[in-house]
Image 1 (cartoon, protein in one colour):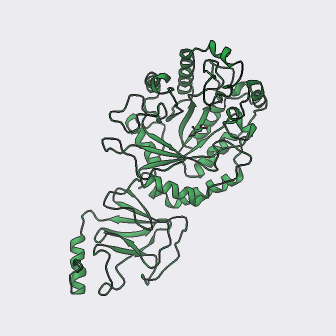
Image 2: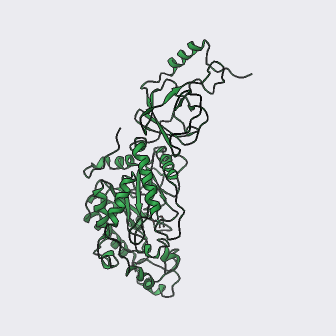
Image 3: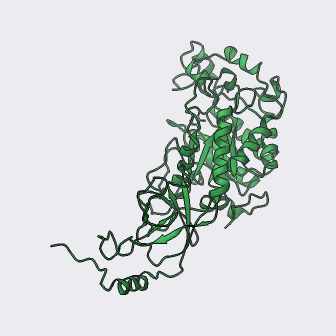
Length: 469
Ligand code: GLC
């Protein structure tokens, strides 16, 4: 099966299915804070006043071509969609909003950077996700006093500032901005909001109303879950709960299910270093193998991986990130069939001890993550495999049995094995130490019993295990 194609004409009913099939996306945190180069929370952490933060506004000027460079790299990495911070918690807008002056078109950049990014992503054929921060440290109607993270939380003038704050006015403002984003940039695939805390939850954001208005404009759009912290697994879900769950810097131990036991679409969101936005001192890069394995881990549990890759203030992606993404892309170009459009294997195929399974239709993919000594066990797959291939090069992989079935102790009579060469009992280094992917075409019928009978006849004895003692 081929990877899902991303088209701008996909129908309403298939939008979440499209996103789930895409499996791998990249996100970008971009804004004034990249000039400070110590994280997107810098204004809050250092309790900066607006004048101090203004210095970044006055010097923010990404290079022309920043968006095309990022989008090309996203495509080369094998990602199928991207998410851009159109406004982060600092309230600065990368887009030309009619509702604020605190925007990219008023910086030395003088350009609508959301427009540039959306155009670049479309040109690469990638899905468009827009991130919008519900939290706003710039807007005067968002109270600072007593807030846990507002930069002016301890400022002596804040009580006077907050006296005239009007929450309904802020809600109108941000609803208006979200509608701008969903009106002015063509088809938007995802709206990703961030974040809820304390009583800033659900209807305090006017969440049902704004989602209704957005859907009227973008019927196919998907919403993430950060409109509130609570509904999560509850059934029925509140109207504003969103279409999928997002975990942050964490992959759940098992795929997510709601309280009625139904699988929930989900995505794990990770950083490539340990920072969301460009940090001059964070050089703790995750390796290509770590990301590839995280992606496989997610897909093996029916989840997506959203990987954050930031640019510096000029809009350039650090060299280490470029190299890592290109290597991931190279792996995906060889092994993408086991990721795109694939998901968790059916329940009969439990996680093997040497790695993970993913499955697409009648093809089971073995992701061998650990060097195995001897041949590699496929528990319970006797009679289920028609043929096996190393998908990176379509080379045959040998399906074999216990090397000496008449004598050896059996783990299970329905186990079979595979190996990359003959003699099949030998040990061969894994062809790809990051993740070697073997595809197994499964038989339509479980033919385990007749297979077992054939082996019993060949051995001249029963393979039924007898209780010990
Ligand atoms: C957290 C951080 C924020 C970042 C986000 C990404 O909510 O506050 O800075 O954008 O995670 O998931």
